[in-house]
Length: 105
Image (cartoon, rainbow, N blue to C red; front, side, top):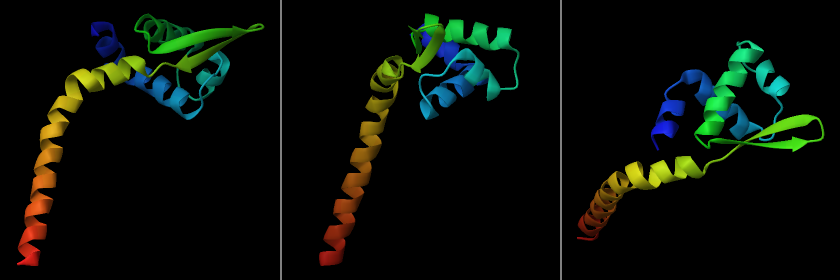
């Protein structure tokens, strides 16, 4: 999980993930067209994202296509976010029920 957090710490890598989320399966050239970075910089960022398992690549002929792998993000959600969210959602549900009961009276 440390590699995922390290990968997400950089704004450029988050932009790459956002770009793949909008249009999955892009080549390096396509990704470079949407970013104000050199091809070499995008390649380095993609390598780090691949090492963190956030991006998977598939060769299609001579083209290397990059795909978003959301599994590590889901694992972070399950481990770090969902357990905190449950209490807040339960509080909102309890508040709604309480307000509905007050309106009936």
